[in-house]
Length: 286
Figure 1 (tube, one colour):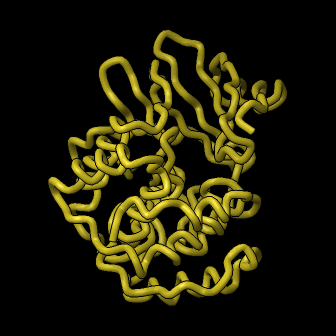
Figure 2 (figure 1 turned 60 degrees about the horizontal axis):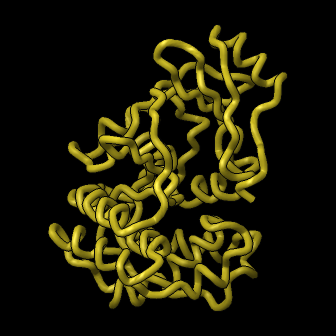
């Protein structure tokens, strides 16, 4: 699916050029359901322009984020740009700053500085960096789950909210028996669509390029989603060694089935990945 050359057509690019006053080159999207149309501005200091193409109205992931966390980036495009300032300082993969520019037929348009870097493949090096990154993001408990520019709900209501989401999801049949929903230990910054291509590896540094879906969510959800990225014992050991310098890995036994059910219903690894997600090895041992 990655090989499909999906990019903004000439008409959309023309309208974007008229809106921004910049010469733009459309970029190929990595996935058919990519959240944004992308362009590179042709100027001395190039920018990456992102025009939202998926919303809760036409995308199961963003609809799920709205239903679970009460967050819709279309409604708060300017406030969303303040998120990097709320994250812990000195993250090993710093978030790229994002600027809200305008709307095109209601779709928000943002810009980010262009970087000569590439998304890394999953490796022990990336696993270690993710261990350091998540350890810092998990350092401070948040006051509830949701988003600071949207709805905030008490963590005590998470089990009921998650159960209702699964129970009433239009693709509930993707999940077998309803999993249990124990009370999470705390709420932390969490990127539900966590993938290795959300980051960039440059010649001298690493960057967090795609953080738009960040929410406050249970610690156990974030770790269960991270576990789905680990491909072998080397990745596991690298992550645990880095994360363990600040926090122990909690027991995920009772949480894992429910969190993996959410990963399936949000189609975080594709719509046909249910068996692979549910049966993924338990790398973060209980």
